View 1 (cartoon, one colour):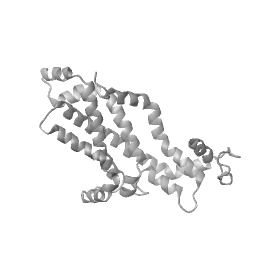
View 2: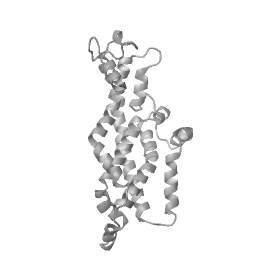
View 3: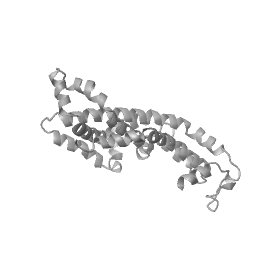
View 4: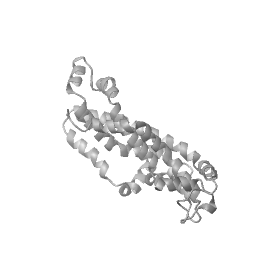
Length: 251
């Protein structure tokens, strides 16, 4: 029902928009609001791809490496390291926002997409590590690792030549998760970027306005903003569920 109101309102002219007529179809269908929204959001739309794609790939690769080491290499203190990594999942974003901004400023990372890629990769490591550790611990047989060891493969070669090619279900889960998290983020974006160099959520907020909002353009902008994540779930949804289930039980 909310989606219906979004779509219908986005094709209305200003005179057709009102609380009493929100369920009615437009008297005259127009794409003017879509054109206005796309013009306002287009630069940020493509910037957000520059954010979400690297975040999804980098954090997934780091999570896969962490998950493999923590599931198969039982070094002293492995459980403590894993617990400390998972602890990052439970730290509220709001609690670290000010010190986080100070850290990226001290490191000299410029505000904008570069900063957001760094931050989302760091915050994505715990959940990616958890997913891959469970996947490797419950799905990849120990005999496969032992066979690689017998053939003379070290830890890195085993990971790169044997483990990564069979990790597609885990990567599907983490890539979808990280892509949508980075794409939909607003809190990090408002602290670490602005309307000139930030993602689409910042641009959408600017489009909505405060004093005299253009409801039709705002509705069209909300649909444009949500379209990439919707397509990701539509195209990869069944692999997402399969990837989650792959590491859920031990055969």
